[in-house]
Length: 160
Image (cartoon, rainbow, N blue to C red; front, side, top):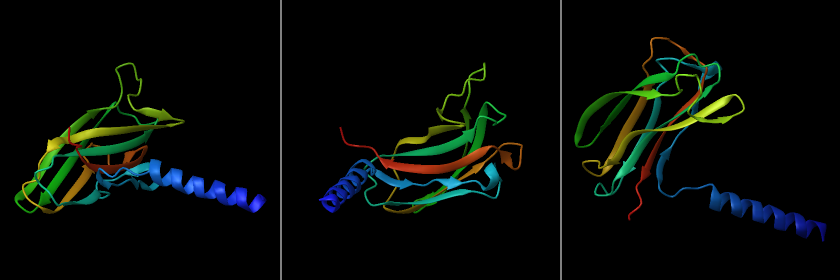
């Protein structure tokens, strides 16, 4: 009887994790931990999105997590995008991470603050194929201290 209860609990856990933990709209969902919480210029976040239907729009997002000891209220990054049908595109973004009073805008959990920030919304790739996305920090400090991890998320936008 005890083995059956254990098996049922295990099966339920696996099914719940599988159903709740996946988003079928995500083409990419990367997250790279920074060594000693230091984001250096050479630590570029990379991802490859395989686009099968360029008629369907996607959303590209930048994921960031930092500690409460991060010393700035913003961050600058560079996004590089290349692939079939487009020359290499580089765009610079600035994101506000805190209010003037120092209140962090991200979701807090303990000492970490998490953000999912827009890069390109309702974006149509020019043709089917594999596209390279690269993100690098573009602040004056190298390395940029107290950055826990960063990532890229590319998601299909659901039809209305």
